[in-house]
Image (tube, rainbow, N blue to C red; front, side):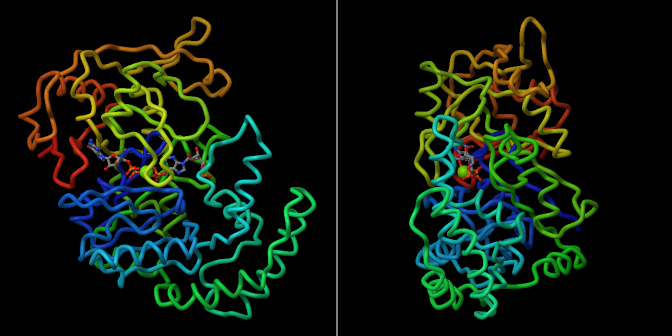
Length: 426
Ligand code: GDP
Ligand code: IMO
Ligand code: MG
């Protein structure tokens, strides 16, 4: 059986964790394919909340083999903490497998992340300061260390020593920052982290292909989202990897023809954390209401998220670059109390209408949203179990999105809990 991709269509935090957990009920393996612990994927099961950063969101299902793919950047200290936290809550992590080709985040990456942000001043990206960008930069420069380097202490020390000669000149000469000690770092990584990580290292490309050959369904879980993608997002206000569906191939070793289902996870409105353009952003009471009811604060950084209306210009683009086969809508319930709900259907710039995302980003920055208005349903959707129970206004809202994009909407979230959803297709 082929693979399914779960991909964010906006600026992250759409509910990828919740829907991955849900769809994983019919899968045997869940692979995280990019990003690192900048992600925060929330699962709420039987009233218990799990905020996952690196471990795939299939972890709560015993039948699922969780894989950290080669496209991920791994901070081993954070991963060990996450493993311990899950184990202490009775969740087994013994089947977790980590690609030896995934790259390590080292302490200087986190330091450099903060220094680069500081250097940008007012133009800063608003990163999670987890060292993600610098770790991917070292990967591209071919001076990164990989998880498999933990298998051989001599190789690890040698590579670290060479890389840190360059890193320390950057720290001291460019940033006037004290140098960092490669021996100290090697000691922590080899003595403390390696014994915990090494048992999980595996040839994950082989594992995913064995699963595909056995006709099992595997799930490829994206972190971040289309508009945080290094190539397709609102550069430079993006992350340093490729969250789009194409990244699911490069980050897991699954070939494009092995994928037959690509679910675009979409919040019923839009949020963004960090700086960058946001055409349909709200600065009024309605925006505050959405922050409040939607608990729009970062899952692991606690930062308040910026909020706005759903933006079809963004979704049309996301549909194309990800080959979306369906949409899953999260947080429809957050709109329950609104009298009027708006959807941005196009942008306007100097009198010209854009249904398609303007290629020139400065035009995108100054575009004005064109809205279509919908009456709210003004009732509690959180217990909805079937499409037929949905009020007409909510059904109209979803139909409008579906028809505008020509993409079917199947799963719809009406609350954070695992069972708070309904399917529109069944
Ligand atoms: P992710 O990064 O895409 O996995 O999303 P996050 O977990 O960062 O943010 C989504 C937030 O919305 C979490 O707090 C979820 O528990 C919550 N959530 C997910 N789906 C729904 C839903 O349908 N309704 C409500 N009210 N909350 C939801
Ligand atoms: P999940 O997987 C929302 C944002 C940061 C910043 C930009 C770059 O939970 O949806 P980085 O630390 O990656 O270099 O920061 O990307 N960002 C996210 N925003 N959800 C995420 O992950 C994010 N991961 C990174 O806020 O604007
Ligand atoms: Mg998140």
